[in-house]
Image (tube, rainbow, N blue to C red; front, side, top):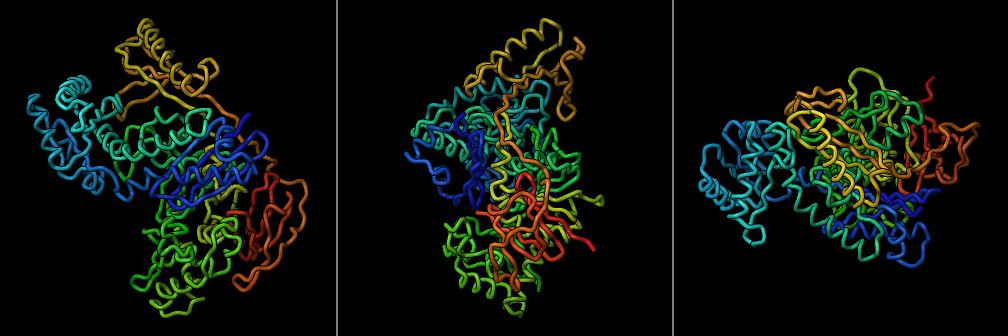
Length: 624
């Protein structure tokens, strides 16, 4: 087999994890927010360097069987409200109030007063309403009508509006019809799905199609695959923009579920700490909760979404003082200018600056030795923004900042987990391992797992995703003839879709379901169990599994004392271990540091680590 490459594009760093059927190779590069295609290609170049492959980027890309990609672009766009101004056309005022009340701030930022109620309007009046919304600044319009005839009326208006505003003219405004995007969903979910999809669509379309073009120039074998927030992957042309929202965190959740099952954890939490946010997930019986109908910042959508909330706390989060206390975030320095120690113009204090001053991070080895850190700039930032406002010395400021950061994440875990205890906590992301023990102590968790690929773990998790398509067809009854006709139509659609991915339908897993009920009351059941008199949707789910990374034994047969790689002058001095130099079964007691190419795990006093048979770090509180 050729290479299977997974890329997770974050706000600060972009992670790469590749598998060739035998070994796993990982790499990282700095995200380039001005042009995400640049960091995509830089990441592939870094991968080629790790593989020691000669022949340049074209030879590397030509050797890739499939490239799966996730990005925080959509998540960040919604958080920062960066996108087009939207217009909304609905049946009546009640629809507007329902949409606005669900997520007032989001509605104001995306739509504002660019709303028209067109329930009793003539076609000429609807056309004038569209012109008015455009005059108010709407660059994209969402049409969402209510009632049983919504799909028919939207279809009629589609013909009218496209005749008036032909799509081939420069003056045309993009239109999105909610019953096309989310047939069968309730009007509020169709409205918000349409608005969020329209908001994300321009930037995602521009970037992903540009990325595909660049890959084609280097003779890629197969189309770029987008990893979606439902855990599956599809090519760009079969992905809606809304499915990219929170796709990176979902990759981490997929990987966490795989590892937790491997180690026998049933109820646990995962923390994915990146440069801008910490993504959390609670797993019950080894699975993260998934809602058939998700919501984004309170806005109800018509698509499934895993329960992976985020808090504004990461390695690049700005640390400041307000009312005599250290505040963590919500603003982040991102990749540019980045933390003060990156020496790219940032002057605010961040967790990365704090950990550098504490000695946890080594300026010589950080980011695989490819990103120099400036100790003096970090000192100036922490002294100016934390020590002086609190009237304490630099050492006390470092301790206080670490405590504030850990307390914020631990509080989020407590809120997610409730009163019941947790078997373990999985800590990953570039900043997760260095804070894991402190967070676990504050959250009352006695066991932490740091995966060996913690620094690129969302990219690692994407490697377990299948190619997945879902096709549906509305039927007035589930009679034998109606179902047979729907099946033929859906099989033709699915066959074409999978062929475009490079696979034959006969080589895929298929599952037929009936979807009954309207709106939020919709539910699935096996097609064979449905009464012929019912009406609803025939749904075909198609899955094509791909080769995935194998796991080593959960536990080592024998344990032995880990050989130290020296001492680091961190927090009074502590032994340093290098993960790549440790065999399965190696163990040591904290305080100490375990360093990998792209992460550092800080083992606190009272904790000890053991290298598992899969070469992960199992860190446990020693007890009395």
